[in-house]
Figure 1 (cartoon, one colour):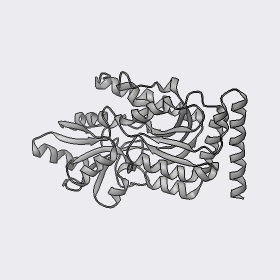
Figure 2: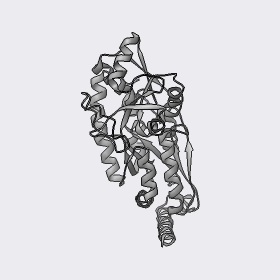
Figure 3: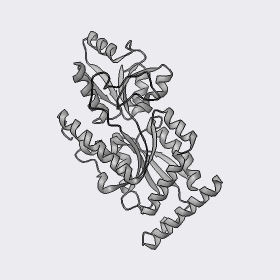
Length: 328
């Protein structure tokens, strides 16, 4: 039965591509065996890369064509986003990203090299998540209060790792510092994987990143997540309080994960791929793997992903403006 469904979906996508050709979009789109490349803007080993590989493994079977993940790290995802903009709008190149590259970077960088509203179209959302504040294993603190006291006792700046400059974690470091009257310094990395390496080596005492970036090392006792953002505690971290509980409200809106295509990609392909994503996300093993990473799994149609991005942008436009940050 599963093979029959996959064959049916694969035929539907081939038909969509054939229809695109009839509209004058080029014979190249009719090559249904052409691999689908999913760009990831961060290095292997981080949460975004892990999610992409889980999905690609199932999508290749569901779609009946090869689906490969290509890492293009650098500049907080800008390099991958620019590559998506330059790619042919034939469904062969997609971009799996969280909020940072799609929503935040265009607010904080004067010339990111792309304009999401004009250059990209949403294809499918697959999860929301929350950011978290964690301390390294070499730090004596086991809570935010203990971390605050520890930093104050050292009489120096508290360096806090962040996966990328001018990212939501950087603004969160500022908000946390102001709330607890700490002189915190956001230390940017080229992705969560190198940041985590320094935390595991006790080269930096704390970090702010997504729950998926911390979850495995937290469970292994190598780092300690001491607070999460969002409106409620996370199922994967039930004993960890929210920042709202700790007296830092206004950080409840959850970031998102989604897949985007170059503007002009035919709607039949987008709808077919989104339908395939819905089937993959309904698979118990996929939901379990993504949930264990700290993601709240749920399929979003192209329209729903677009609405989620707009709502998130409204929240962070206010936060960034209130911080006094000027685009660079």
